[in-house]
Length: 251
Length: 214
Image 1 (cartoon, rainbow over the protein chains, first blue to last red):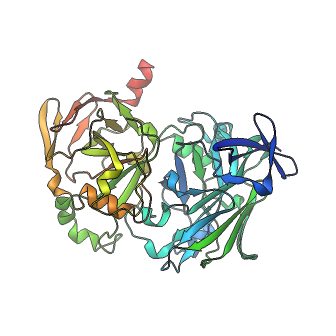
Image 2: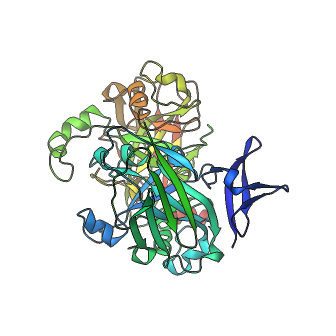
Image 3: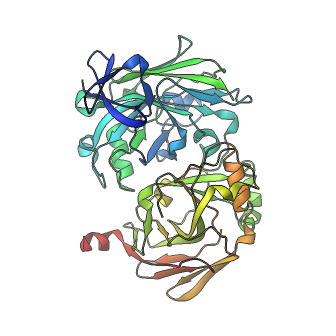
């Protein structure tokens, strides 16, 4: 399985190749770093556009009181400030009593994509990673919802630990997702339940704009809203992709 | 202009537009007036410098052309005060925020605002804010707006935004759009001017016409 991680090493951000057993990160110039000592960064090309989906799982939509399928996909964008790598911490404001994690499959674009059909769309995806895209429901407003105060806060989108090559993910619509908080499972679902598949999302977005190499598509989250506290360890995991650890700290 | 980060903009920062929408804000789907600044993000492929034509997608007859000022951050602004806000900004330029006409502010307007080439920028200069911005369509003045109409000044906007999200070095911030921005059709030219700024001059074309040239 081919996996690449972005880490801070010897004073700079570098891409490293993850060993088959996951214990070592091989550096491009030779040598390696032990995975449990690595400073993980979000595995993202600097300057990439970050697209995210709301309401893309029918069960989650019913949970939130929305129609199972929206008239058109709910897409929003995120800035680079929102990202934080594996093993990182996310600030939880003191008044954010309704802050909840969201486990999401992330598709990484590998070639410029414009007006791509769903049938060809996966040829434009180079890999997959995991996101934990926190939301804070108290801060929701009905203007460009989900608004920036909910979804574009610093370090509230954990990403990683690595990107798995698309060749190693034969069917992105058959992956199980789960979230645990302090070891207790609070969210469980399958990418089979996505309303618009990865391929459908590439078709939809590329019909509007050009998706560029490195761009990310966060594909939405299934059922399971669990409010978290400062100090909680939150783990989002997708089968065949990775296990992403994050901790909430009081802010 | 080196935009290495995220391009942010705000809508509903025009006092005249807010006054016109006061009743609508209390009705569905909004239910209450906006509290925090209403932010949108434009992908970097929106931005063009040097007058690249703006492509209309098939089936669309016109675009809204909203002139504003873009501020380029040179230092991270985090939880900044209003007084120090502009000290994080190291360049400014005119910007023409292009969108497909839409009356709704309920959901992020991706299909309307995020298209390739939908953000012509002028050449950057030192940080300053003009009194007013004038837009010409086919050489005729089509719109003029004084920045005194901004609900939140640039300083106040930076202070409030940075209270919940860092505006990072390399990010661009569009400080507000006029609610009654003019429209332009394919074949028309649009020019934006403001004292102290390099102007923007672009033409509106179609995606089909651009594809033929390519």
